[in-house]
Amino acid sequence: MKVITNEIVFRGHPDKLADQISDKILMEYLKQDKNSVVNIEVVGGEGIVFVTGEVFATTHIDIQKTIKDVLADVRCCTEAVVVDEVDKKSLKELKYKNKEESVVVYGYACNETEKLLPKGMIILQEIAKEYEKLRKQDERFLSDGKVKMEAVYNDNDELVKINSFIINHQNTENDVSGINEKMLELIYRITSKYDVEVEDIQLNPYGSYLIGGFDRDTGLTGRKLDIDSYQKFAPSCVNTLSGKDPRLPSRNGVYKAREIAKWALKEYNLKWCEIQINYKSNTNDKPPINIIINSERGLLETPSHLYEECIPTNIVEDLKLLNEDFVSLSSYGHIQK
Image: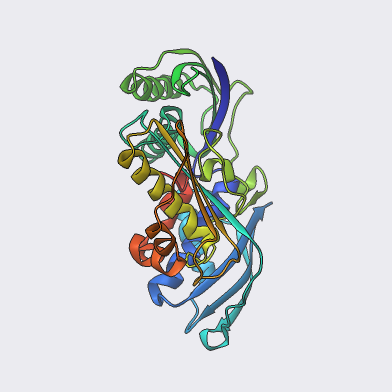
C-alpha cells in the first residue's frame, strides 16, 4: 500500500486562468488562419493581465477583447487591465529554426477505468467539471478553488480509498451552511459513482474565501504541469502546453504519446502502459529518435510504423489538433480522453 496526494484547481485559479487565456488567444488565431503560429505567455496579478511572446499571422486578433471574453466567461477579474506586449509579425516573416534542443514527452494508460486513466485522476477532473456546472447554476459559488486529495493505492496502483479531501473554493457568503451541503453532495455523488470510500472531507478549513483569481494571487502560464498531464500517476513532461504552437512535438507529442499508450494497452492486453517519445529537436518535420513502450511486462518492441505516425506534421493531421478545443483542455488538464 502507498499514499499519494494529488490536486486539481478550478477554472478561476490564477494559474489556470493564465492557461485558458493563453490557449484562447491561440485558438482565435487558428480560427482566423490555420497557418498562424503562436508562442505566448500570460502572467496576471494585482488587477493586471500581462501577455507577451510572439505571433506570426496574416492579420492579428484583438488580444484585449479575447482576454476579456475569457474573464467574462469565468466571471473573474473582469475589470483587470490588459497589457499587450505580444510581438506581432507577418506570417511571411516566419522561418522555422532547427532548434537542437531535445524534447521528451510521455503518455500513459491503464485499465482501471473505461477512459483508460487512473480512477483518482478521473475523480479529480470530474469534481472540477461538476463544480463549474454548479458555479453556473448557483451564483454563490465563485470560480476559484483547489481540491487536494490524499488517497491509498495498492501494489497494482489501484485506488483503494480516499483518506481525505481538502477543498478550498471561492464563494460569496460567510455563512456557508447551504453551500457546504451542495459541495458534499457533489463530492459523494462522484465518489459513489466509482465506488470509493471517503474518510474525511474538509471544506474551506482556512476560513472564508471571498477573493479569487488574479485578485488573490499571481498566475502564470504552465505553472500547473502536473494537473495538465498525469498528476503523480505517471511521468509528466516539463514543457508548457498552453499558448504554444501545436505543430511542435513539445506539444503535439504529448497528445500522441497518450494515443499510443491507449493503443498498446488494448493491443497487448496490458494492465498499464507508459510511452516515452524522444525527439532530437523541437521542429515540426522530424520523426522521433526513439519510442519506448514500457509496461508491467517490461519493455515491449516498438512497431516501426509508429515512427512515421509520430512525425509532428502527421500528428497534427491525425489528431485534428488545429481544430482542438484547447481552452477546455487547459481548464481541467490536457489529458482527458
